[in-house]
Image (cartoon, rainbow over all chains, first blue to last red; front, top):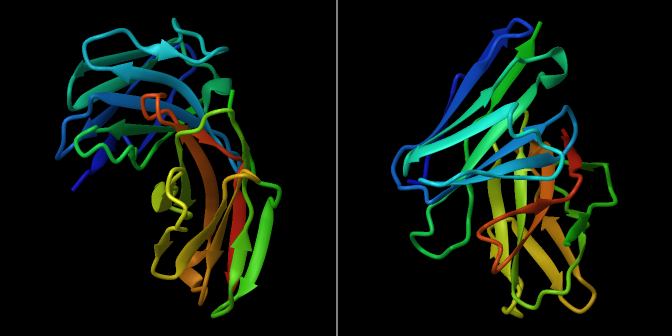
Length: 117
Length: 115
């Protein structure tokens, strides 16, 4: 159990366009979802925390208007990179916390590689 | 704010041998959780082991065990009988009890298991 999926796994887009990444909890309801960004050989950098039905909480330095996060249901959160630029190219990872067993464990998706040309 | 430090960017070990990865953290919290995650070349994050700060007993999961020293704020991971499949980036992570599951990650240690 506790599987998180991400779609797409890879995406290439042109500079100036927008791209949406989906994060789904497949077998549990995710009260909270997290979005991370990871550069090669570096650690995960938390971008934002989203709770179902409320606005996302962004980390300092993350542009809210550029990285739009919507947590519309207990199983789906989306990250939209608006007006993408080459510097937005990165590996984006989502995770979900079910709170179902108070285990305080995040379940991670497989990640999405975004390349902006 | 919490910080997590992994001072070994890269490590290598021979297959079947034992290796220890270091992690230190800084916090003023008394109730928190510590984790080791593994990220293989597929980049899927996998939970290796977790430790609750209120538990004195060190956590163990098969070949993986931790040495949790609360006073020293140290949380090292020992991998016994290393296998080729253990080759991965390992991240130490901290979560305070009141953070709503928010994780703070260390910089990571790239472990290579050599045949």
